[in-house]
Length: 103
Image (cartoon, rainbow, N blue to C red):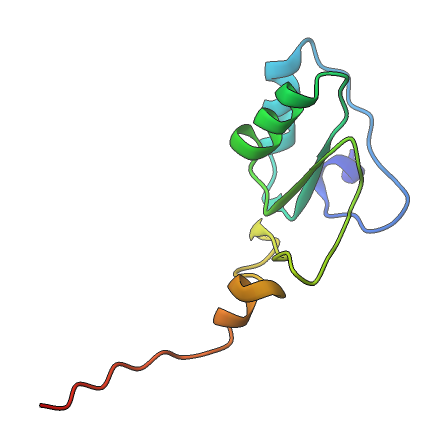
């Protein structure tokens, strides 16, 4: 289905039945895109682990959808972008650092 394989922006999502949590993570990661992901769960600690360690994306939210703050870096991985905007991490993407040694 195109909604599963294409990067979507808007109030739409694909519902894809999977057999278990591992299959859900594999399906989420089986994409050329990687901007953001949401984990909806009753087990907050498990959701945090999935979001931080198992999902291939630049941003992830647990029990929330797309919360932004200028203090937090914004950006994706894979075909969803390179680098980050906003925050200290983001500003470093737009500067060139030079080392000058004078003896």
